[in-house]
Length: 526
Image (cartoon, rainbow, N blue to C red):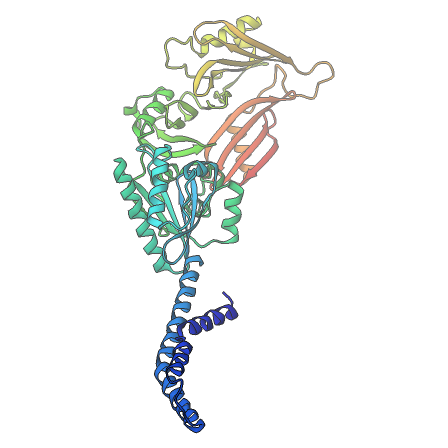
């Protein structure tokens, strides 16, 4: 309200507060009609009466004016407090809702920050509603629509207010309101709460991934404590899933408080994940000498990241947290080293190679571990079936490997690769019989293509030497790296080793010439 409008209202109030005494004065003149009164008497009497009447009404007029002023000022302040923003409250589950409130904790506006939030708000109009009532309505709708349940019970409360004490007070009030709402449903709530100061960086982060500023602040805090996690991987997840990942990795923070535990009832559990990984490795859980199981995610899919060791080997395995299916498998040491990626339909398996030189013939006796499922024919039988179909002998092969190919975590067929002379063979063999599903062959060193190094009498340097060449190029030692993978492959007639490993916050990828040991390609990503 402008100053001129406020002054006009005060003036109107004063005018209406002053009594109208004109009628009474005129009537008093009528009663004295017929009496002869001198002019001087009239003047003197009128003067005296006027002074007397003025003195009698003056206090009342002053009180009325003061009262009108107080009422106007109070009304202005009341209107101002109702429309002025005091705090912004964000509620995140996966639906993200923002509530702008005034000093009286009434909702000025409610915004749905994503499509799920629009479902939650529906046709509710929360404008003018008490904050606790609005929170109860939102939680009730989330429970009704299945966004909150016994399987997913976590909600993030973010308060934006420069006054730390006021922010803490609101967090407590809202947390209590949420717990009360959950209590009616019989579900135990897990409430994470934080104070947020919106910055350009947080705003940009929120806009990029379509999340609230509050969720962006939480993710930023989690990523700062664990460099293996990324904003990109956490943004699609629910608050419950982010809380489970943080809890399994023992991440702590002073900026986010939590009451209640995030529910993991939707998942198979750490023990079951370890059992599934051990079964995939063909070992007993009793043989495991060390293990670590953590929650992780890949493209929105919740996983158990399982690492364990036996006396002879080290294993890393990603297990679908809901189904127990193997998504990825890697082994270092033992009789079989390799990696299997099950959710992409491809298998990157490195079957340790041994180069045995007998005169001019170099025979690669790649060793593999048969699948523990006795209904499958096994990798050796798959090799034999492929060699028989190609009309080749194992002793003539420069490179011979077989492994199980997975699709969505399930074994699909055996993949067999080998090279005899200048021809490379690829086979798909059925799991339970020696049936050839698919075959392909490609010849090198003929028809003008003589630049390759894949000849029948070529001696390969071996995986260890190839890894050493890559490490030397990177300026690292074997003790500096983790998650290594070495795979023999061909690239346009060249036999190469594809090498991947991690050191600290960096991931390395190399291609090394399988004959000379020369580094052909190198990449390093942060």
